[in-house]
Image 1: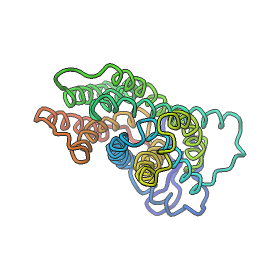
Image 2: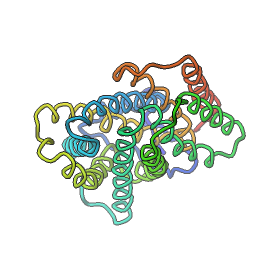
Image 3: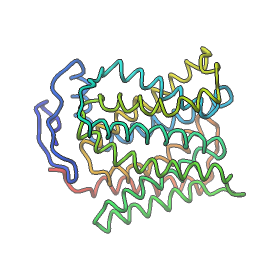
Image 4: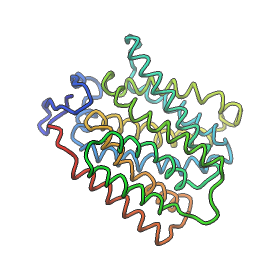
Length: 312
């Protein structure tokens, strides 16, 4: 696989499990591609984590107007429109590439539908913790080193401590979060395949159309004409940028340059950032034990990054 070096020239590196492919040819977004190439993959993942969790906290406030399914529909439809406008992808693709794009898009749509349904019943931090089982499974089963297992276990202990609350959680929310976890694992694996078959954000733009098409019937059924309300549209556009356009573009670029198992471990920051977003946006307070859990998760993420095998 190829990437941009510090001097802007193409540098070829090999990542295990990802086929080598040429870097996208210069085009109208060459500057953006160079900027992505200059940012370390772990930093891209972390920026995506912050963006998606702030977006989720904002989206939860929109539930009273558009509902969970309506909010997801706005997020995906608007994100698809923005990405199509930016990347203007070609439809001349082979059948296997279309299958990868369709599969990725459908998993993306299902992941968002089930996750937003889960946070309708349970707190944001708890939902993200359960959903985290998906990338955690990718991290553990994709590794051959015992040290990566240690980091994954430390992260798992941290996220469990982070969201321990009295009284338990509503069963529907837990089940929806578990379904989102399965979709998230599939998203990580399919995103790697998508990154190896498409350039820039073209594949993501087409995949987002499939995800939006999946969510649309549910959103219309729940929200109806409220989806056209100006305030709902404005907030929905912000959610689309924060939760879809920005993080997915960053994550796809990161996955072009790092193994899925390391990506999965870095995603251990999701519950911590979700709790912080809940504190700032939704005024959800953290207990001292939960702050200790945040430290465990951060330590696991930093450890995984520092001990990752070199890609060259």
